[in-house]
Length: 186
Image 1 (tube, helix red, strand yellow):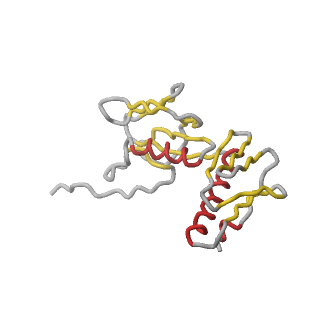
Image 2 (cartoon, helix red, strand yellow):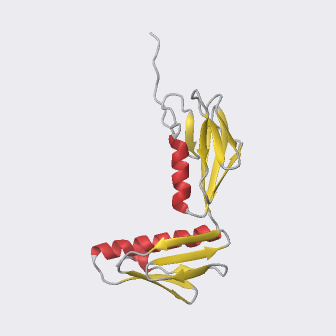
């Protein structure tokens, strides 16, 4: 039995759920998210709770049962609270500016990088006190879809991965960079 799949998802008062045969649509104050239902998994709303059920006890159905329950829980959390990822920009001369629908990043290349912001995602730049040498600022990626927020943060990080010698680049907040020892003079 899937222990994750059996847990019901409590629904806040301001969340509305529309269940069809193949999808579940969750509406809340921060937007609307749609989650597809794989074959053999169905959902029901009972007593203010969303419950996922499976058709049989095969190994694949049990795995999908837990997956669908987690995706639905993320959708409910996303439309009520939202999700956030924070990225630190570290390096001399690096900077980030947010325009209307894009982020302009100067990351030590010969040209600035313009990253378009997808729909449903908001990006802000803040300067927070951090004990990091050559700290420039923090990019905050927010949205209601957990997968999209994580993907945007990963895309921005991949524009300039942290350097293993000096530690400069774009990194997640709290990420530990293990610095290598450089050349030593004789």
